[in-house]
Length: 403
Picture 1 (cartoon, rainbow, N blue to C red):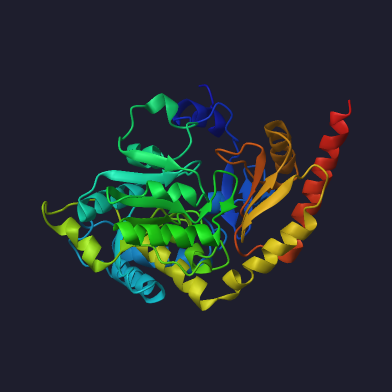
Picture 2 (cartoon, rainbow, N blue to C red):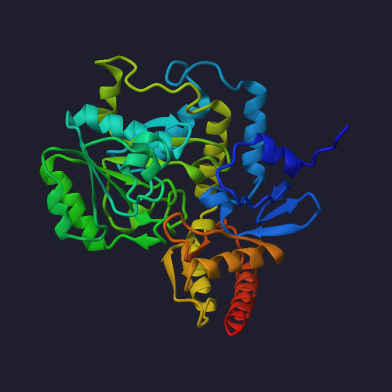
């Protein structure tokens, strides 16, 4: 009988999204590290794309998952039964969010949070037009992809949703396109997949004012920046601006799949009538996922040093990543883009990092940038080691260019 390796079975039976997957066969993970089938360990410099903010298999999150799984998992579609983990998670979020963000709709992912927010905005405002920004990324489902502001992922799936305009990011003059016909503006507080570009404070202030003047809902997509990655629990807190709808996912679940769109009770109530069940999800707010998210949030709140240390760790990366091959290190908190001269340089760096036991990645719209988004628990010593390895790799790259 022919024997197939796990990698061969993966390539045969798991739907492929790339013709060059990393093919790391990870058998366990803990803290900052992943371990493959051969026993080699890798320092995770991307946290599963901004997911594992407290590292892998955090004991408090694991305990919460195990405890809840022994009680019940799925019972009924979202919103019909009183699930204690859902209630406590929503209550805890409401306690740390502004007073207009008190109603939480739990879903399965970031893309689903975007889709729910789009429906909510159309229903509440009775308008049909949306605005987002060039080089934004909001997800891969039809509505979320329609909002995303780059053709890289969109071209082969047209026609997408109509009545969506894309404006240049951080451009004050462009905000005149927001009118009384606009249902909502979707904005990332930090544009991640573009290569990590934080919003200008004046731009966000003007955006908030324009939305208020026109009765347009302002939606902040914090799917990649929420839960402490920026150095505050939510990136919008850096700007003293409050959205009308907030989107969360990725790190929200502490490693399990859960997302949310959050608004006022006044806005959210429109989903309960005309029609009833205006938005439905079977597995949204799954009890086990909600328990994991609650344990993750409670740990971040109970151990404030992880978020409080983000700015210092960002500064250390910036201090150490100095090399002629590095054009810029850009970002907010522990969401950083290390810009190199080309996509080829980035792929060389990623490959050599893997050889040295470091997992990193690139960005959807910025293949010339290396992604640096480690768990918040990364230590100064680990940062120093990672940076020294990257500098050595870049020195090799520079040498090879000469031949």
